[in-house]
Length: 256
Image (cartoon, rainbow, N blue to C red; front, side, top):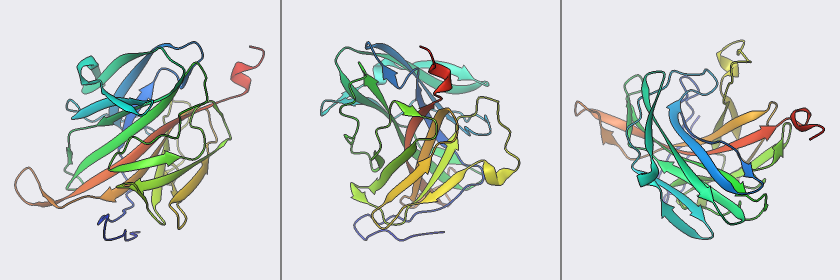
């Protein structure tokens, strides 16, 4: 299904649940109650199906947004291999209370099966010292999901709400793909269960109840400008705005 955006945005939403690609940016924790270091892995893969992992070039941009300022983190990147494919990781220390947003802009990825370039702007929020503050600030990515529910300290079964924005403006009736980062404990009965899909309302607002503990990726996908394939033929570009949110089981922390 396609929904037209305004002329100022000049993008078209697309649904592509088959072979859904998700740009992961997963921290070691969503809340650091005493601050300190957080480790973050950056992988381009299919989360619910546990792969395959795609080869990922060094990101074009990597940063952290905190207290209204953006800092470049590209120099902190380290290379790692996952399933024999190129992935990335970094560490960052949180010294002051407040939520920070880590974000990545990858190099365009050519997907020959779909004959298009893929660029997923992905972000994740980490709360230092369990402050509960600063989580709604926007990075200003071309396509971005603004959280309406606090994206940290969530229980399994909580409702997560967000607004899909393209060039800062809400996108009416946007479609959002959702996948769980499978730890191997769940096998989807068929392909229909791999990628969940919700549709936003006229204000670009969507909602989803996370039924299981772990990391959940929410991806709003739009058509970008026309481009050329590696062999020079006409091709499409897919732009994605992703946010990663963690749900925690109450039973897993009972008595602590």
